[in-house]
Amino acid sequence: MEVYLSENAFVGLLVSTIEVYQKECFGILLGHATPQRVVVDFAVPYQTAKRKFREVHIDLGRSRRVDEAVKTASRWELVGDYHSHPMYGEVKATTKLSKVDQQFFGEGSISIVVAINDIARQQRWSYVKGGSLSGSINGYSIRITAYHKMNGQIERALLLCPYAIGFLERKVES
Ligand SMILES: [Zn+2]
Image (cartoon, rainbow, N blue to C red; front, side):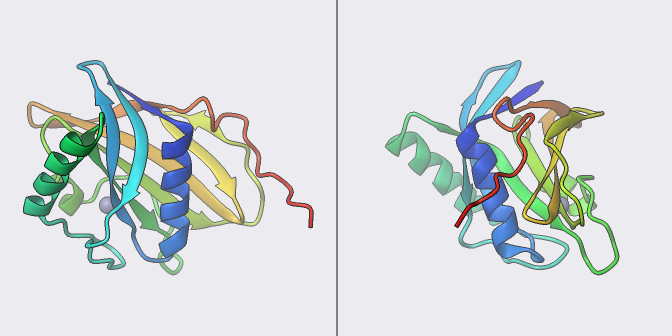
């Protein structure tokens, strides 16, 4: 499975993750899904997620309502969800799925995890082993991993984001 992130979705994931750091963010992914490829056009933060440090609980009834509203109001569909894993004290965040993440993983959908850690140096955006995307922005190190669930099996998807590759944070002149 390939997951293609648009510029909008990439920026949305970053903003959402950085905004609530060091809490977890949670949201939904809108786009288009085919059997081999999911295109993510937008990442929309969820207002109702309980933002706790280590886990986020979703209301499944609500996400069904959101799915219906999205289909009625736009040409996109709900293709999955995302959340962040923030660095917690000295514990480095990873994009590994927790037990709760696996438990709430929707069949036939994708889930993106964004790990955010404090760092001292800049890092150019690139693909890393296992199909993740990694880079830095404003003093944070970010790693993004996409997963896919089919027939009860959760697997890593190959994450593609041409917009992000080679991107080094811009120097803002004032
Ligand atoms: Zn998680």
